[in-house]
Amino acid sequence: MSIIVYTESENGKFKKSAFEVASYAKAVADQMGTSVTAIAVNAPENSDLGSYGVDKILNVTNDSLHTFNAEAFAKTIAQAVEKESAKVVVVGSSANSKFLAPILAAKLKAGYVPNVVAAPDSTEPFKVKRTAFSNKGFAHTEISTDIKIVGVSNNAFGLKENQAEASVEDFSPELGDGDFSVKSVDIDKVAGKVTIADAEVVVSGGRGLKGAENWGMIEELADVLGAATACSKPVSDMGWRPHGEHVGQTGKPVAANLYIAVGISGAIQHLAGVSASKTKVVINNDPEAPFFKAADYGIVGDAFEIVPKLVEKLREFKAQNA
Amino acid sequence: MKILVCISNVPDTTSKINFTDGDTKFDTNGVQFVINPNDEFGLTRAMWFKEKQGATVHVATVGEATVEPTMRKALAIGADEGIRINAAPTDGYYVAEQLAEVVKNGAYDLVIAGRESIDYNGGMVPGILATMLGMNFVNTCINLEIEGDTATAIREIDGGKETVKTALPLVIGGQKGLVEESDLKIPNMRGIMMARKKALNVVEPIEGTKATQDVSFDKPAPKGQVKLVDSVDELVDLLHNEAKVI
Ligand SMILES: Cc1cc2nc3c(=O)[nH]c(=O)nc-3n(C[C@H](O)[C@H](O)[C@H](O)COP(=O)(O)OP(=O)(O)OC[C@H]3O[C@@H](n4cnc5c(N)ncnc54)[C@H](O)[C@@H]3O)c2cc1C
Ligand SMILES: Nc1ncnc2c1ncn2[C@@H]1O[C@H](COP(=O)(O)O)[C@@H](O)[C@H]1O
View (cartoon, rainbow over the protein chains, first blue to last red):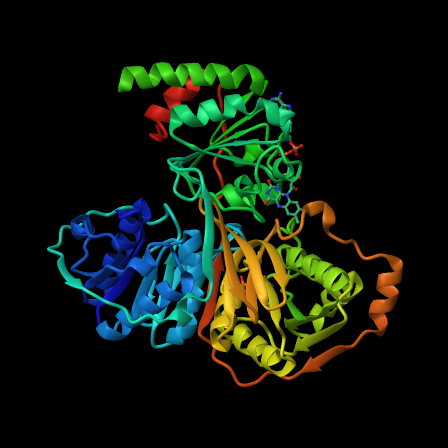
């Protein structure tokens, strides 16, 4: 009956979001008076999960799961759900989690609600709060199937420490060739770079930066903040930046602690995708730019003057606070 | 090759969002509806397959009669035939079940859906649909090539891209990148005229599962006034001491 949580890892290391989904699962378990079982795939050093309320870890060691495969991962989780007779499954919001969750939903005939931002409103009926309309609203959604899948938004619930003695049990899913009929042939990913999905700080540039050649200062700003870089849609459409950096309603969603928008006007489609960020800073030379209405802090002025100064100031700040 | 493009009918991206009936319903008053942007990229890619590889392209939607203008637009862009399952699309699981029936009956080789609908942001219909039918599935697809029965797709992953190979029959969850923004087709007069004569078949829904239900809605708390600062020193100070984000 315990709550199953899929704790994502990469190269054997848990993502920060793994601890957030574990914290969430613990909150649901408390509400329902049950325990939390985590599934860790090829992440043998998993004792940290106990700090976030996980009671049991299903430790999966399987060479064929070194590269993510949505079908095979969904099947692994489905088998764990069956084994534990779980009624609630908690997953995250990464591209991989959002890929496997619907597959899992169909396998378990389970209702799935993504983008959930708070512990359940109630567990009987099972009702959760999620964002809808690209962050322009929230919906309170009831799941009426026997098994329920909750997809937790990044950075919304937060990390909640909760010491538990996590027991570890080896778990071997039964997988066949048919589960690998979508084959990964190449992964093109810059190693060591913070991704928009995982970043606590995102620095984003718009058309106000005039051209691809001016992104050096954006990268420097991101670098000093340990941030990911992002951009507005026209910037990626014009090829100044790769499509993967486009954020907004039709791009990637951003739910960072700090979002810094440089030379971005703040069109409704842009704001829709980034407004879940906690603190928003705008640098724009037009005091009428709509983004100022949606921001927490703003500087009206020329980005080409302000950004280099900000980089310098932050370097000083870092040196002092190191 | 027989392609089905799934079309979700959504409020235009500039729409103001309001709720009505005691915050239990989305207020459609004054809202303009459009083809979900992710589906528009998929439809344009389907037209490319039609032109270059001789595919037949159908479009399907689960929706009530009010969605017909959106379907006519899809036909005007160049789809050969439309199917409307006559039911309110209130739940992703239910929508997938309805579409699964259409895909089974139509023996499609490729189903192009979007990564997510921009209204309820479910991001679940294509994955559920594929799994129900035992078809291969690639999500957040930004490039798709088909040769015979083999598909090569690129999908966006966090921080990069992954190339995958798989076989038809296939379902994808597509998005921008599948075609470029500049390739999107605006229906011309001839397309609009032709669309009027194309079949838009209405079928009644099969019995399905209502897995989830939106009980009520609310809106984010209004934003406080922005604090305008004059210097980067002040900004760094505020970010550190007030917002506590650095
Ligand atoms: C269906 C649809 C979906 C869309 N989806 C998205 C989306 O997901 N994400 C997205 O971003 N957009 C999206 N858009 C586009 C959106 O409507 C805007 O066109 C876009 O966000 C504007 O980008 P921008 O702010 O970079 O450019 P602009 O609107 O051109 O703004 C540039 C800003 O830079 C400022 N500026 C100029 N020079 C300087 C300087 N020297 N220093 C400081 N500031 C300066 C200007 O004052 C201006 O405010 C979508 C549009 C449609 C129709
Ligand atoms: N009512 C619907 N009718 C047809 N296709 C739909 C419908 N709802 C969603 N889809 C398809 O599924 C994709 C993802 O939608 P969703 O799971 O609702 O976010 C959309 O981009 C469409 O391609």
